[in-house]
Image 1 (cartoon, rainbow, N blue to C red):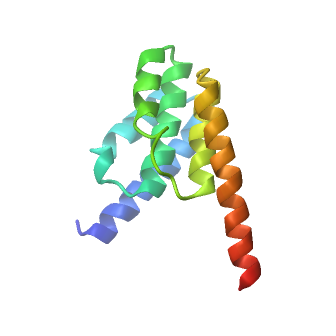
Image 2 (image 1 turned 60 degrees about the horizontal axis):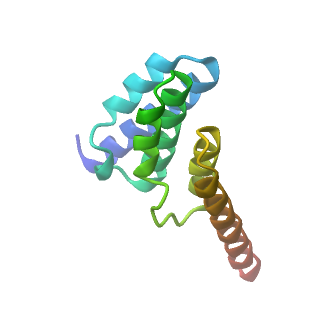
Length: 122
């Protein structure tokens, strides 16, 4: 599988995770997350959202330590997209990491404003 096909496969796995979470299909979500493989090798747009969803799922399953361990991978990462910051902020909020949630929400607001300014200039 070449890099483009692998990225498309990972995007499909993320989509299945998105569909599984609101339905409470937590085992399916974790299976899809594990199928992603080593998260460090995944582009941030997929990796960050997948980790946030997996952390929220682990929290819902009662595994608070696993949820925190997952989020630690991304809550201090230099995220450059407001959407990704929001995903991690929501997960942090759900698990009670309020300081991280607030910092990420501020970062998301700042990045969203920057994106609007760039769009307005075009």
